[in-house]
Image: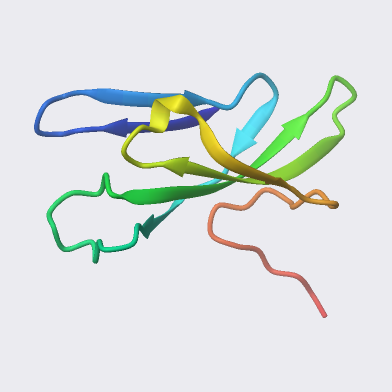
Length: 97
């Protein structure tokens, strides 16, 4: 899995593929410095997403990836590997007390 950006005006697409056995969660857009998000375009942003990479045994390792919204196809500008696997969940999850 990965992320795709589609420009609805031009039809241009940019893709970042995370690799085999990797599940990517819903991403969050964070405006870059100097951009308040009101300029009519979403390309001046950082794209943040949680990913879980599974090995052949099924064990998974989670990471937070940071992609440049202006050039999604070049891949992560940063990736933070976490010590624990974060369970899959698109909008969050419920954890009993």
